[in-house]
Length: 108
Image: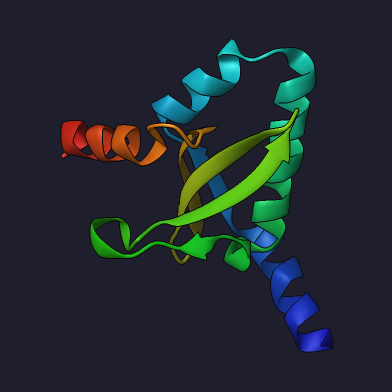
């Protein structure tokens, strides 16, 4: 138990967070209270990167963390590397994966 906690503390202080344009754009459009909720959820992910569920198929390098705000399911897609956490997308479940795949095709 102590070893796991120590690993999470080390990860929290070592890992850097980077936010891709779709993520930043979504957050920028939201109200300030919802931006604070998103900030709290991002902090949870940075403290424990394994909190999300790993995806399969062509999104296998991603993890998706789900949370509820104002009775709506919100998803955050992120990828963990050895030193970084890259936040790619955030949004409601509707068309979430389609938009994520579209962004990945545009970037490549």
